[in-house]
Amino acid sequence: MNKPHIVILGAGYGGMITATRLQKKMGDNEAKITLVNKHDYHYQTTWLHEPAAGTMLPEKTRMPIKSVVDFRKINFVQDEVVEIKTEEKKVLLKDGELDYDYLVVGLGAEAETFGVPGVKEHAYSKWTVNGARQIKDHIENCFAKYNNQVEKEEGLLTFAVAGAGFTGIEFIGELSERVPQLCKQYDIAREKVKLYVVEAAPTALPGFDPELVEYAMNLLESRGVEFKINTPIKEVTDSGVVVGEGEEIKASTVVWATGVRGSSIIERSGFDNMRGRIKVEPELRAPGHDNIFIIGDCALIINEEINRPYPPTAQIAMQMAEICASNLNALINGGELKTFKPDIKGTVASLGGKEAIGAVGSRKLYGGTANFMKKMIDNRYLLLLGGVGLVLKKGKKPF
Ligand code: FAD
Image (tube, rainbow, N blue to C red; front, side, top):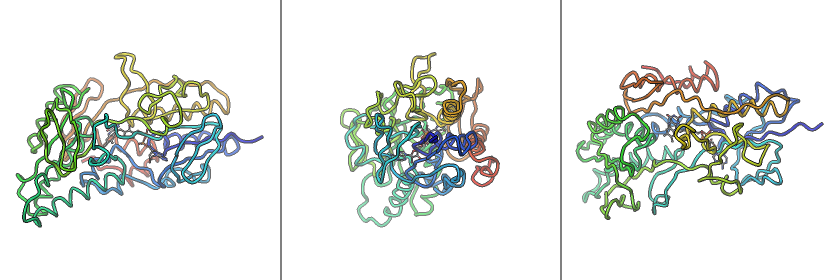
């Protein structure tokens, strides 16, 4: 009898945990498993604000997929997914195609532009290893250029972050810590550098406790960050951002962090979707597709308590992957399907240096304690993915 073919799309938090759990749960004769990813490495998206600001080497945020996934048990295909043909049970890749019996879609998210003109052309919006390297190189280049200009270009040392959500705040936290070092390195007075965070909503870090938000904003302001809250960006241009009634903030660097939508592959493949995300059934399958699981940022689940979608997080992606692997095993080998309920353990946002804020259970965490917790969360993922060895190799030092 032919073995069923499970194809996993995307080697992010969701895809990697699904693959490593399936390689343990399923014997070679029970299923053929294929993992498809653009690159031959996996990266921790949640760390990318650090290499983007230049406070961590990009190498630290990634690992070869084969260092964690057993290629004798899982067939790895390095390629780009182009479209899913559900009726033909086929995945079209840039350089080929794959037939599947069961599919797991874990392709992550893409930047949400909200239709603001100029984002794709003029802002840095790619939260990937390559995207982070590009932001860092550009920032350093601005500093290197400054003292070589006779006529100083307006806004050359102005860095504007669009969005005061999780990603925007974590990035400006790192950048505000790095700026004094860059000023020293390139012989530039600190007051020449301007850091802005521009946010359309009435508060920074929506969803966080107001006391934690105040702590974060005060700390960042003390490092020279200027917040423009309640200020929707109308356009991004090659010289900065246009806000309000046409006021322009001249900035050579605009980093886009206003939130994400799901994957354009989902939209292209004809699934019922909301901004690239599929509202999944309780056992994480796409409605009407009993053989297709959607996990991580591609999946949409509603928090019934507030009747709003859960924000897409690595925490949820990892928990979904555990259920997805268990349900695939049950479908193939027999057993009960599990339903998914997020178990939100807390949220911690880093603010650069040794600072962070967070809420774990009913406790609010600040400063060093929150920073310690953040590192523990980052290391916990490595532990779940590759055990103690991976933590020792790639983990963050707690102090
Ligand atoms: P991802 O981890 O993004 O993985 C998707 C994978 O699919 C990638 O390997 C990608 O290369 C691959 N891929 C995409 N398209 C294709 C294609 N067409 N073909 C082949 N491969 C493809 N969440 C938290 O819980 N806590 C945090 O502190 C936190 N901090 C964050 C900080 C930053 C700077 C950012 C950007 C995000 C943060 N998040 C955080 C959100 C978190 O990173 C995401 O929710 C999580 O990565 C989603 O996991 P995923 O498996 O769905 O996708």
